[in-house]
Image (cartoon, rainbow over all chains, first blue to last red):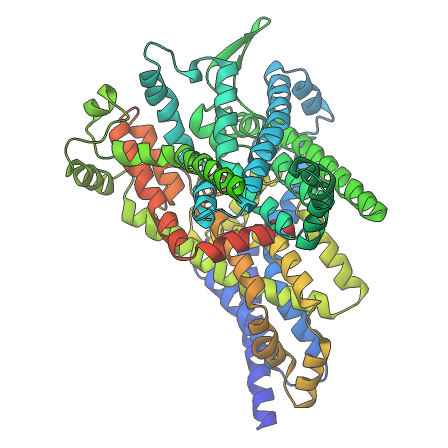
Length: 345
Length: 285
């Protein structure tokens, strides 16, 4: 039985490899044959299956490779390889299909001297900081209310949480309607917030806080529930007011939760795209010196528009690389600060 | 005691007011989806006069060729379900191998996965398009405008975080369990599929929910890979293309929004506890 199994496996490997080799020959010859893709895939799967089922001493190592392969392969093709060639492309005149020459730092220079990018940079920075504060303040307040013994607190929590489940695109259109039609109807005679660049940014801020606060609240709740009851009771016995308990006991004890929440909101606000696209899509425009820029286009939307709408792929890619560097620095800083704090505690 | 009671009463009032505030947009969607276009302009807050209008609107939206609700819903569902199934199996396999082999290569691979969590989609989205296009022309495997390509990309993108979450959990499973099974004559892959994979259930739920919500609602990746007017549309893409073609027809747009929200809200009503738990667990890790 064992040798029969071995033979089947060897046959499967042989057929698989033959199919793959034939497919590669077709590809090398630039053949348009529709056979090449099924041959490649089936041949590959056959040989993997054969190797995997082959009874031999190295079975455990083979299994390790086979188990790692699917995820590692998709990960390499969609993340690692594009990431590396993406950085490479930012030094060329890439147009989305190919490139003809290296341009050195030219893309970076163009980027930092274009007013629309610098403007996006500034408003994204402001939006990130303000949104981070507003989301955390709202979420923490909601969490504090939520930990008291109220009837129906699960219902309240669920209600605050729901906006987070719906995608930013759908919510963005709904809010565009609210700003343009509902608010102008409630405050009769007023113009929509979305017609003024500053107010439009504030509008995105409101929606973003509304969408995200319920989620962050849940994380704070988990943290607050982890504070031992007897510590709070002890402080009550010692005569601490509830405000004092909050600032001297609860907040220091969930310092770790604060770091998680601040980091999450920071990264998420910085990457804001869906709401931005659906609510304003960059409008209205704003006059900046003698150039017109999109008044509410954050970095992510700016990158998207540069590459996809204006067809400047190399420039868009360069902006994306800088976008990544900022995110990486922030994340690294957060991790180091967190580590240092944990050592202190 | 009395003071506490009145304080709780005040807090309850605050909570209820906040619930109204948080759910007000959903209320607006619901009432305005049941009006005609003119009715919305006159009064966007009041209840609809005609209770059957909502079904007329729904009918119009569902049959619109830009939205094609059932097809988009089926596409979104198909992509999400297939990706999640593969993702949970593949990332558990990878995480198990990485956690149980304390070698240099395994820690390097794990480190790469963790480091890659910082990479935002924006920095790879343009090169992915050209990579996928090259693969398609070379091998004839359709990667753009196909289910396979989108699912492939989601596997690559969801993989690093899933491995990270699962890896942490697997380290907590006692190794003696596997040794015992090995002595009893269980093959290594049998150990994984019969013992480890079922034990991972609680974290697998977390992985499913975190990735499920993200994939279901994601706009950027499918918009680039499937195109806004391609053959395959997911729900977020369908609604964008619908809004683009019915500019300012708020009755229809809001009905479309309602239809797009409904599946998630229904799911949430049934699996509220698991969803909240899963999303919070994922964030803390």
